[in-house]
Image 1 (spheres, chains in turn cyan, yellow, purple):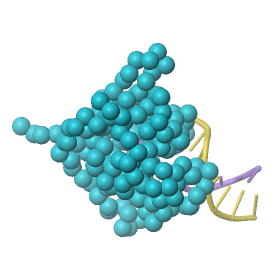
Image 2 (cartoon, chains in turn brown, cyan, blue; image 1 turned 180 degrees about the vertical axis):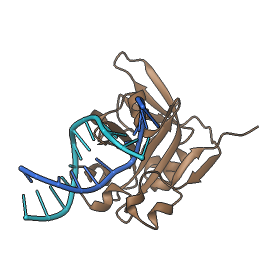
Image 3 (tube, helix red, strand yellow; image 1 turned 60 degrees about the horizontal axis):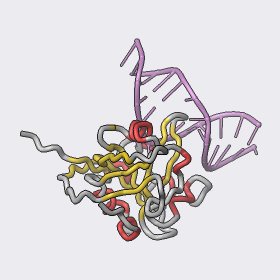
Length: 173
DNA sequence: TCAGTGATTAGG
DNA sequence: CTAATCACTGAG
């Protein structure tokens, strides 16, 4: 299976967030064993206008990586204990990103990073070139369910209501 | 329901 | 320098 290349990450965050579920995050462990985690849930953060997006505050030390070319990782610590992992999307100077909220078998953005082992040392990593983390397309195109994003009430309308959270919709039978 | 925990940011 | 905030989780 081939590594997903730059072009994929240059689309807008909503498009990338809709395509990511079903794809696999591949981690090369220090002992060179490869671990794969299928993405199950994402959220899109759409640039400077989106008040829920950290980049709406402008270019700061922390948000700088969101202004880089799509394919880079944006990792930050929240509540003093949980690392959040985002994939930057769009062209350079177009600050958008997709939060990874779930990756099998982990549910919840803090559990994902803890489970797969990403932390601040992965901030600014380029997924299209890194030797320790990248993305692969399995070809699986799951059914998705969209809904409002979590934990961003401070952003106010209309951002609270944007249906930019995407979850694999398990078939009920 | 609510405390833990520390980086980041705005402001004096 | 201070103080507020926070894209969460787990325990009760």
